[in-house]
Length: 276
Image (cartoon, rainbow, N blue to C red; front, side, top):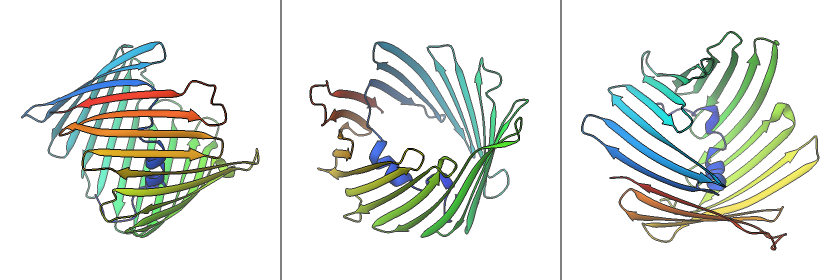
């Protein structure tokens, strides 16, 4: 919505996506269909371990309004209404899940060229209020977020971060878990189209004096095939192979190995997303 610094949740997101997105350990199959009236329907079946689940999601777009409704096999109904520019440079998101009548949530986002602000509150008698803000530019941004429990009068979380973005790289530092952890990440793109990228991330938890260092990367073999891999200092090795079978329809194969315990069975995941 704006060419400003982006939301606080965007800080470190590029590194997080490279290291976590598409790394799956279950089996997933989804089919999407679209109509000329602006309705999109996606049916999904998931098998995780010995359990199977499924859902049907419907999305309807009209002007600046998007309505999402999802039904799952556990008889839950999740509804999300997103409205953009009720007031200029704002986005409002309302959601609730049935039959849990206390799951309602309202979030408002405000975008500016030099800053963003978000506030979210649960719609119940004892709401938790989350607030975040960033200031800066698309190149450098400083941000913070906090969660406040109105019942106890205490902060449930507070986090601060900074990010520096360049055309070929992105670096970020996040101080989280109420000051108990710090995470620094760096992403470098080897070409302008971002077909090949490398990422490094180090996390330190002060209470346990534990460090986790992860390196990874992605490489586009061609216009249809993408390979991703990651390895951390605990010996966990992950790999992803993603191939576009037909336009917009993607097959994803993922695996995870423990290099320090090769006698353990590797974990594999498979996902097939079919779109017209």
